[in-house]
Length: 162
Image (cartoon, rainbow, N blue to C red):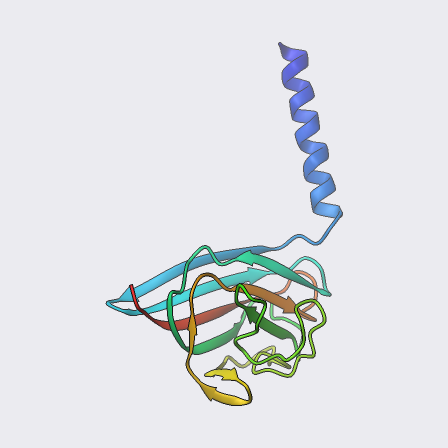
């Protein structure tokens, strides 16, 4: 029994080591604040790979109208200046207005070239126009060019139709 337990512990340590030093590792903690139909989905992220990462889709169905997005760099582990963020819906369309296909970002939406020190906010960008956009389902957060061990928060303000 002791050999089995020791073997399982060793496998766990090796698996962790492979994850920690292998592919890009990141974290993305999500929470929702709500006041009636008005909701704010916060996605606090921390990077491990300096090039970028794709977070898992938000664990929250927006099912409503996105009206504002905030980009808040971490005060303690600020991202590299001019980092980029896209928020893609289930069809791969960036609600922040990036015109490239996911994975080949052009960084030309409102999530492009963000400040490492100053929080910013913007309405979403659809076909070159600022406004609100309906989103049914989840959004996937992509963060690029932020540096390793850097962090920030994206806050998505929306009106829920549920």
